[in-house]
Image 1 (cartoon, helix red, strand yellow):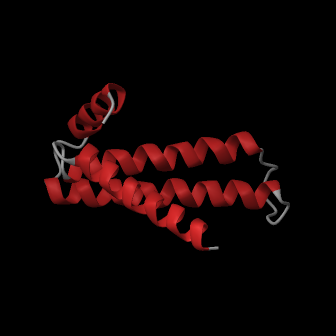
Image 2: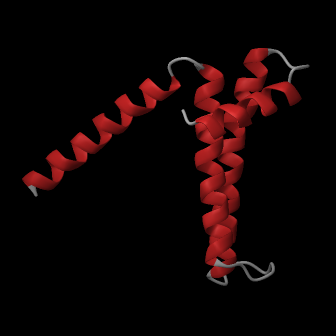
Length: 105
């Protein structure tokens, strides 16, 4: 995990220090869903599918990045020392499957 995310994780953990560790982990996983939902809401607004204000691709991007950051923080909360290794292993496994599927198509 990068230095910036480790600093952000420390700040967020300090803000939630009054919560039990398992609750903090669960709330952070929920934050991933919240950010993804906001990205979808902005996309719906961009496409004119809601009666809300107009949205932009910039807002969609902002919430997508928020989802990624929230997911990385959640991984760090769950396993501070192994989050990076877990991420790398899963990314490799998923991209290998993608390469294999593309080769057989």
